[in-house]
Length: 587
Image (cartoon, rainbow, N blue to C red; front, side, top):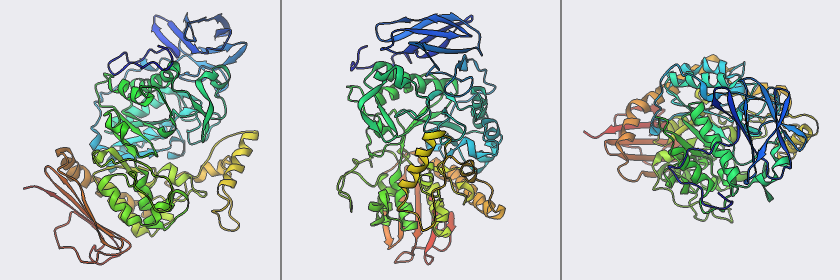
């Protein structure tokens, strides 16, 4: 296949599987590297070098006998480099890789997955979720989350980066679990523990850029990247190259197959630009859906364009819905800076749109915005939108990492919590939100030298106009910034109150709302504004209705008709912050 040819459609081979070190049985391994401009490439294996052979398409390959656990690397025009598709490193991102057969794991339990409409997602950062910050420690807490009603864990990226601390979005070895969290086997055990508790595991993957330290592909395969375009985080990737497409598609299949994951969340797909006749993201979706893994696989996007195209293909189940977040956030905080500005004009009106149509911005003119964004998406199922009140992005990209509960009236935050967990969209909680966490989640990293200085100074410049006199952005490289971001250290009574609230809401969702969702949508949502800051919402299903009354700062102009309620916070007829829910099955 040459550049710009149409890639294979669904039903084609799952992967050409040419990158990295692949076991072929009886101690035999196949090694592959794409370095089309290199003059010589050799395999360095356990201290010895063996020349590799180049194919016409720029791949270098070699078959060799080896044992799992041996160190290896590629020697490219005299420079020894780690395998960009390494399954594990011997140490940091600059040293040799290790031979690991991740597909050889013998799973101790069966897992048939879960339907998407059952998803209640919990976004987790492995490094701060527990004191140990490891897969093994997190595995011990999976049943606790399942008992609350969580049905899906979404891990922030785990692909290896340089250093120990970080969010994971600056990974440079997309196939290798970050060693500070544990080994590949530790990650597999974590997945099995979550699934044993009845929860899916979704992994956040970054296919739009590489991190700034240790991405050697730039040096020996410059063709991997576009010459002129850059993303906000680094050089743009050239997805018209067949080898580049295979690198990431093989990666997606590898995580789903070898780690028994239930899905992937693709970071910032609006930065994946591909003019090919068959877009990379469509091919990736088709190839994943063509897999036969005996369980449903769920692909989620983050796409700030508000485009329904990928969900329309049937290969992607949902997209993160920042419009919902921004509407709730501005309604509760009154903030109007940056991307909040258009939503601060009429946040309750925007929330009406989000609760009825999914996205708010669908290509219409918006207050204070010169450009239009999005296209109509109300034809999508409500489960095509992942709604959230907090995410790592929206909390951690603030200068001081404040959570919503530290910025708004706690009564309003409880109402927003109830609205999120009972509406028929897919709800997502950010780690700690289930217990009303008040500790910040800050931006942290673990860079050295000049890169550390540039990162620190960049954060200071970014937020210089948003801080009060005397405040400073916490140094992202300081260990104490990382430590301050750990949840679950607050007041036990406060956390138990929130834990009980979360448990009751998710029990109601599982027992009463999800069965209606499974019966199928029976028409458009009926969402109206009943007061300056009050909303009434009705979602019709084939077997019943879900009706919510939501006060986010004022009661309705006319008291609602008294009906038996399945859940309440406050008095919806009189209190400025109140919530009630009626789940009404058809008789």
